Length: 283
Image (cartoon, rainbow, N blue to C red):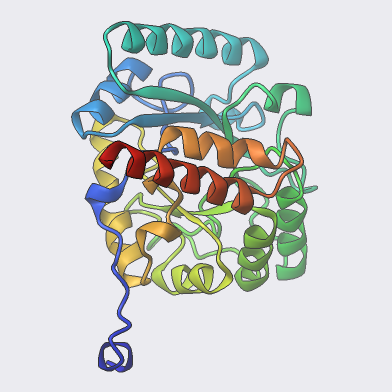
């Protein structure tokens, strides 16, 4: 009411503003569909990209990917992208991974393997019972890894099934914003993690949010609608959401830290260049 009275209500993000999604699984781990099927569903939604982020090697219960499986998957993605280009489709499958944050705070795989991915989501999938300081330090250490692009389902909650683990999310979100890591709003209806209150915290710290469907099938892409609803409840605008950007911008954001640059500066520079191109096209 106060914002409305001062005419400062934000223009909230809309589903039509999303350019793609990053958190999706395929048959290479615990997904139920082939990458091509997932991509076809994304194309049908009008998206420009789909990030495939299967589980990493330490996540054995979900069929985590060995190094050889990663190489096979990347060959398949390269072939799909070549086919899209040959048909004139402005669409790209991005090579991602949902890498476990190990109890010591290390991100699964070594640097040589992580370098192969276009982006890296890192998530906690084990040892939920650490105390708040231990879990916070675990995730803070993971945020130091320059390969990390998105912190996945940051509180680990499963609605009506598992309470969030003990963690200082204020400290986590502040550091993520400072180092240039997006935090995920996991749109799976069993998670909805982060919640709308933490969206407001992310906005306050200038931390980007990635709305991820955590889809394990083409139908799972529909989860994105729930995520957008939570983002809107948390007062997020398009500028606060990573995947309102194009594939090129997302890739630039993901590469920035590996190249010794500040992701926020790279993204701002990219967007200024895009705006100049747009204006030139309009004459």
